[in-house]
Length: 143
Ligand SMILES: [Zn+2]
Image (tube, rainbow, N blue to C red; front, side, top):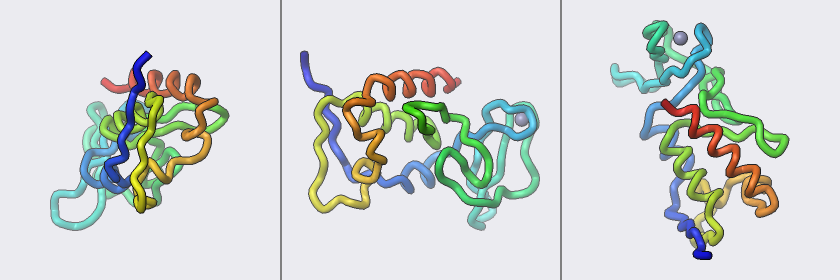
């Protein structure tokens, strides 16, 4: 059996948060919507849903633990008694690579990296099988 290798390239959570659209659950129709960065030069996000259109008010609120600007992320699922979540496909790909790896190479002096900051339950080898199932569930939610 060959090892699946994960190499920490120093990606930070902000790389996934700020470089790509965020997938959120539309609070009106509960389908997948996008949190898009504002195009008027101001910092902030608007929500665009295929069914409901564009939410006129910019999104405000906090993010973290499966939410973004107070809205539920689209990519979230219960796993190992916790919440497994990702902001977008790119973030999910990163988590997929990390969780599926049998060999994880970390960088020294990289404690800002997302890989080094993942919670213990995600890093733990004993949760790997369940985490892989969780990742598959999330991948199935991508259109
Ligand atoms: Zn909607």
